[in-house]
Amino acid sequence: MTRPYVPVKTESVSELLDKINGDYLRLQCFFGMPAKNHKAPRKPRADAQQNRERILEVAKEAFTRSGANASLDDIAKEAGVGAGTLYRHFPTRDALIEAVYRTEVEKLAAAEKKFSENLPPIEALRAWMLLFVDHIATKQIIGPALHSLVGGPSKLFEGSRAQIQGAIDSLVKRAIKSRDIRRDLEPFDLLRALIGVSHVASGPDWQQSARRLVDILITGSRPIK
Image (tube, rainbow, N blue to C red; front, side, top):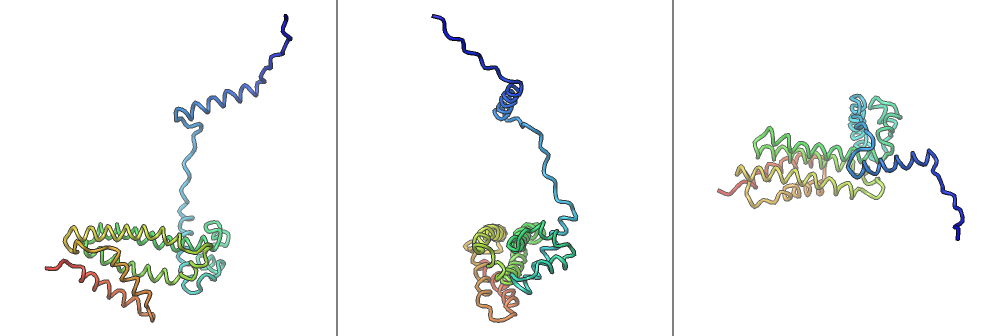
């Protein structure tokens, strides 16, 4: 019995090309070969970076004066940039508030390495703790602004805590190794004491009290002879 004739479907040129290209891409993925050379993302231009830093600087001062309601247009004007430039870097008010706080935390974390490289262990610890007092002041200053963030600032604080904890741990460890600090010292106890002073602050001079406390804490952390 003769089978009925079934026409063989032929692939068009475009279909063949698609198939070849698909097979080629799959081979590249299998062997770890890039399908296409992508250029590395460009670094921000120097002037763009300077604009961003200036905006953050001015914004921090503005939030100090006016809290979350500080005018973004006024911030742009004081920073010497157009409103479009500000919004290009920080599309929303929340983005700007968060960036201000993150920048302060990053400066605090970076200072640990700088102090460790240039100062004796005990002096590096003292210098960093004094800077931490300034950080607490900043946090209090922009506190109302931070609370305006959608969902609250808890996630932001969680991330910053890890950076701060790492910095104080490193400084105390170095001071213990040089025998300037007792081995049983818990690093975060030092910060807890400073934070406690800020929470019970009853006047504008609390920072001076906190700075004096730094020396008291350093003296009390010395090894018992």
